[in-house]
Each structure stands twice: as C-alpha cells, then as structure tokens.
Length: 144
Image 1 (cartoon, rainbow, N blue to C red):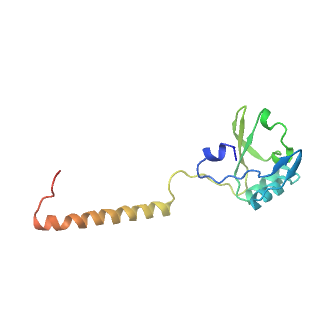
Image 2 (spheres, one colour):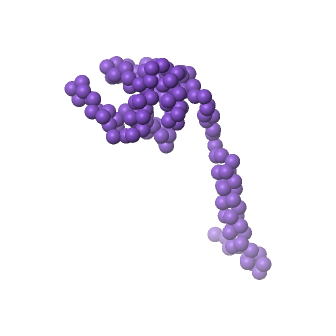
C-alpha cells in the first residue's frame, strides 16, 4: 500500500480497500474485513451505513480528496452520518456518529496503571534488597 496515512497513524488499525481496478474492472481483494466494510457501505442510507460500520468497530473515516481520487467509485466513499474533524484540499476526516459512542482515552487504563505500579514496586524492592546487605554491614556503597 502506498498510502502514507496508515503509517502516520502508528499502531491504529486501519481498513482500506484492497480492491484492484484494472481496465475499469474491479478485482476483489483478500481481506474479509474489507469485504464487510464494503457491504456496510452498500447500505441505502447514511445512517444505516454508519451504524453498520460502527458495528464493525469502525469509529473514524478518512477520505482522500483531489485530482488523484476524483475517478474513484462512489461506492468506496458514500455519504455517512459523521461529524467532520478535518477538511483540507487533500484529506477529509470524520468521526462516525455511533449509538455506542466510543470515548477516546489518553494515557493508560486503570488496569495498566495498577500493573505499572506493581512493576515499579517490584523493581524498587529488588533495588532495596540489593542495597540492604551493604547497609547492614555498615559498608558505604562504592563510588565511581
């Protein structure tokens, strides 16, 4: 894939059409998720398309704009029920309006915080255990 957007998003899962168009005829791709997304995009109304995408776990949509993609089939980028997050001459990004609104979180979850605290506590305990015999003997740690 030559599209730089998936790489720019880091580890965020991205679904893109893997259909190959040769001589105006489409050759189906191999990804089952892409096939499900295309099926969701074929629904009759923007609200139904958005709901189907939300059901697949998709919460945001990015569309390329400009001369490069003007000839792309409409079925790959139909209207959706979304709120615009970014509009530029080259890119359009929107957040889908899902019934189960996904709240983006920044930083670790509560469970990740607890595990991180336990890991640091274990590290500090190992460090303290390594220094304890020296303190018991009254030997100052060597410097340098």
